[in-house]
Length: 507
Image: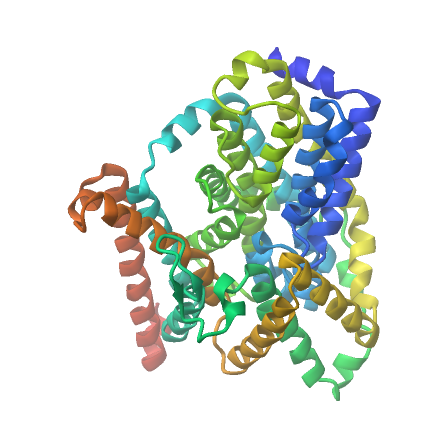
């Protein structure tokens, strides 16, 4: 009944208009490399000052939903993740677009973005406070174990050449240590350059590794016919609806459900977010697949895993925000600022003192997902036409957006130089067949892993025993060991098949 009253509150012409406008703004920002949901929220936050609390918070939630989903557009069409939460979408979305299946890839991504969002909305509405209380029991021990488990996904993302994958990951981990140490405030590995004190920002690194390296690779093929001509989508890409039948949709549910759960759990844990959940779910689905070799070649399962997880993360982040007043990621920190702007304090008492507002936010979140689904569905033909723009026109536009996105991260010209540097590094790594995903995973997770390990050791006076004896942490550490053992076993099995082709035929 409370949720119905929330829908009644939201079904006002002004609120619906704000939801529509916020979702579209979010999609546009998410689709532009470097301009994430956080950027959109930071720009739109001052506009909510004169709004009613319901309208202001609903608008910010809509921008958040649109921003997280919009990243799939550039990830699939250009192979450049619009946001960090769409990194894994590139792995299979872009190969599908190159095969002339851009509309199908976009359709499936949009549909399962909606599935992930609605799943997390249901959990947010009915189980949010209960789940938040469980998450509140997580200490640095549990965070360390969870992040260590997430880091082991690197092995899955580099199947076929685990050594190169681990080297790529170690490079990312090493780069994450540059700058001021958060706990001791000492500078590390800055080589005396003041610009390095703040470390490398994720946005220019991400744009450089994925976007600039892709542009350099395309430019290197400039003399080929394929690189200079218009990329026309073949007639086989004429799809109906979302490009997937009901039977195919049902067949993808075993991938979507665990991906949604992974996204939800990661969203609830503060400070991790969609940057990690999309990679974790992709790795999980790939590991349990009967055909893991198809991942990275244009396989629907990979798109389903990534997009379901990163949108389910939104609901998880909102759970921890509304029930405990803790922002789950950078984007929800801006929504928290929106609450404070209107003199509202999120937390356990919010459900008692402002229940009508809470359920109106739930309703707004559900409606924002519906608007996102409809808006991106009708935009599929328009999005797909990007592939028909000649590269001599498209690449300068993409480069311009890359420069703007990198600069807007911290308003530093230095970040543009960082973007170019990592573009060169990414291009060299691709040339020598080193996977790029482990580098990004290592860069994102290393600071979190180090911080929680050091906090744990501070609490235990340097002893690992309390970490190992914590039930939840022990569970995640055991899962980490299982993942490592299974990965090594699979690698040895694949190596044996390569050396003994006759065994592979018998298998």
